[in-house]
Length: 341
Figure 1 (cartoon, helix red, strand yellow):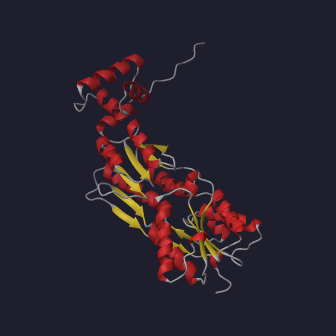
Figure 2 (cartoon, rainbow, N blue to C red; figure 1 turned 30 degrees about the vertical axis):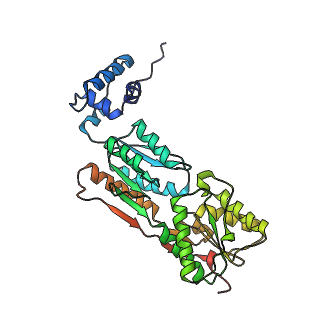
Figure 3 (tube, rainbow, N blue to C red; figure 1 turned 90 degrees about the vertical axis):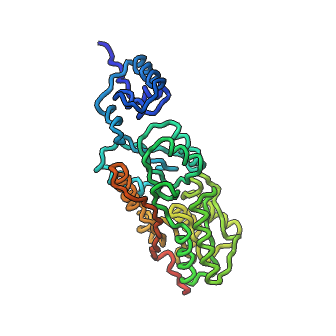
């Protein structure tokens, strides 16, 4: 009994010809917007692979996007998971396939450049990736509809996040709770979100004329996900222990750090909030069950909003650019209920 060979796909043709899948589709549908040289190259790839196009492959020639790529530094962290849930739930109403492209958290801009070089999608939602001039040129050259989440650019629709405001309300809350010697657990790598949250936090301490003890601003050793991890929070708390100097309260750059810090404090016999206040950032689902004070960024609803906006762009219903920044909201819980207030 003969084994059936695998069906050749439009992606294989595009790869063989060294072009985008949308270019292959235009050739298949005799579009005038392809050079003769490219047509010959694509047709040679089709002949060599014995490709037989399906109806789905032809949809691209109508210029109606078929493949949505979500470019994201990580798809395993709770923050990005919440955004992706919002996109996934809303995408059901659109005639689009979806692929997640992991740019990596250490150098996401380089990762997204590689993504555009591959040309494997028709439209993009970019999450937490700054658009520099090189990436901007690639987006323009691709002609792809794009919506940015967690970054901004004057040429594109975006839903940015006001990290500096979030850091400020975290610092303000801890000061108003009566804490005077406040520490910070930073991400291990330099990130826009981490820097802005720290700036806002310091702004709040300055406004309330509180001491800024930078020796209590620590990072963990772990650089996975730029240091926004449970391991990093755990390690930073043990660094406080090694120093023999604990703050009255700790503001963690995100909730996953705070979860790791909570575990380390528990192992050291330090109670939250009786002995030390603890605060995170993001309001991921698990924080409710730890009674952890945090800052909510409405990640799920932002994913929904960005996807709805992308649908408007694709359908020609966007008569102006959507360019907004979402202000985060304090979620106070028991972990910062200072018994000495």
